Figure 1 (tube, rainbow, N blue to C red):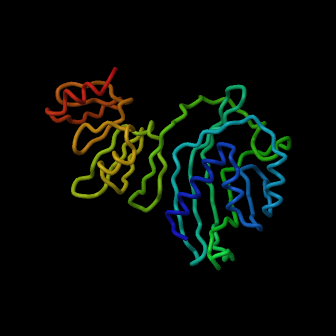
Figure 2 (tube, one colour):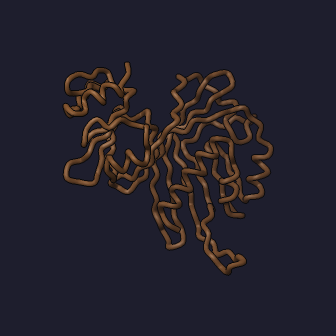
Figure 3 (cartoon, rainbow, N blue to C red):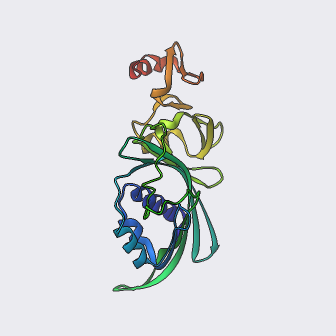
Length: 262
């Protein structure tokens, strides 16, 4: 079981889950899965019981999952623990939104499976624990249909980047949370500057620009910016909404100015 593959799969399962697409989740769980839900006393044992419980669920909720941080440890050669930390917004038909800071813990086990081509090993989830409990309402089956509370409706980001940090954690970051990205001198590392947080990741600006075209604007050999946060442009620098000033080479100034609209 390769760590990066399991992290990508874990992120995919939960993002599809919150789109109300449960197929990747059910396809990945073991027959003896233990599911520990986010509400008090929510516990389901076994794949069949899990499927039957979700079949009873009726709701009109939608969800937005925000910045995901992923960590993986391997307590055994054939077991990996993947921890996801993210923000989840539950959107109610009334227009209200409930925001939770949530953690999700997968226990993956490698299983030996016989196929037409012979024996092979496949990963399966033997435990899934959703922490940060909220009070359980007896009228609910799985989702917090009756836990509605009034909150500010956040923007729903359409674009994300996925990056690995210096501590080997993996981050799924909403592009609209990023102000600018800069090169760390004399290294193949970048600093992602967000509102109130800076994250150092592995990579280069050309790699990021190629992987996520159209997300950001390259204004300098060392800087990419989010155009949505530009407050002012003048010769030869740009000022962002938090007051940060970044240089623009004289030869690129006219082109960059045309690219920015106010």
